[in-house]
Length: 373
Ligand SMILES: NC(=O)c1ccc[n+]([C@@H]2O[C@H](COP(=O)([O-])OP(=O)(O)OC[C@H]3O[C@@H](n4cnc5c(N)ncnc54)[C@H](O)[C@@H]3O)[C@@H](O)[C@H]2O)c1
Image: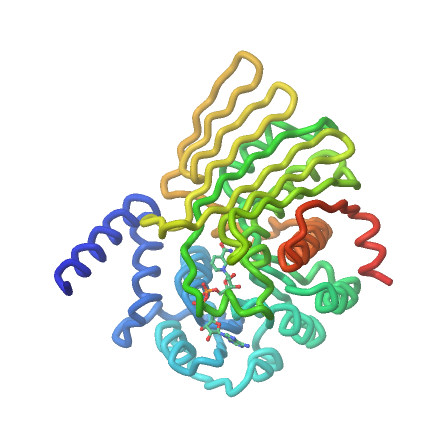
């Protein structure tokens, strides 16, 4: 049994090396085994604080910052002391934070990265913004309307200091597509088929207060849709249909269709019937006017424009993490307004799923007015 497990682990690492390249794969492995004998090296500038030192913070935020700027991590906190200590050891962090507030109020920390459980994101972001920090908050930025309205209020005074972890808009494929599409005010069709992780029944993602997999996962493709729709003028009024494959775990195998008053059609299918060996897998199809694109798991894209056809390859796979994560430093960032719009839509659909609703109507302007009331 142990031999078989080792064989599978080696096979997975080999596959990840071919998909993600050496650096990212090593960080993924380190994030899992947390070696006490390795460090990410030292750096003169250290100004980043991290809240939530789990796999994403270690392997993805850690790697994206490290590859571009070196080891700039200064402080970290996690409710799980083992995760905090192993993160601190690898990134050479010497100050032992006893709370998130220790990280947020540390005068040497300029940027706070929040990668903790979903329910805690908004409150940490509010505290960090109020302390005058630059904030990078992982998705979802909120799990409830009330939480989001408090965050929106604080953000209205500090929009230029907050960045979200929605990364698909930063992928090579979506950026290349955007160049071809430009900003046409014409209906588009977007279809996202996602083979997601199988999540155990007792995983923290499933706790009611964490906002369902709509907040935890589907938010990515709702955000991608809002991003692409915002290349032109974002249509205000939408009809939403949600189809559940079963009543027990409504957010596991689910189809969401949205149609706008302009004739846009967005369809998102999340399926999680088995664990995808290479991690989450996405097939994205797009059409607007004479542009058609097929994005295959952010590893390649075929793009047709009228009679011309182009093929793009992304090795390593480029789902946009690197550019999204360095937003606070790079000067390349999303408009916060887009994140607000996609979060409003996500929270609305999460409510539909909680209440087992099949049909509803949604208006961005109405929800935004409610938010800012
Ligand atoms: N952008 C992406 O593509 C992407 C991919 C994976 C995960 N994520 C996000 O990253 C975040 C972390 O996910 P993960 O996969 O690393 O999960 P994880 O379970 O590995 O890590 C979460 C960490 O947060 C800690 N934590 C829990 N509650 C906390 C609290 N109140 N304060 C401080 N720390 C707390 C946990 O102890 C754990 O170490 C989530 O928001 C997740 O949605 C984003």
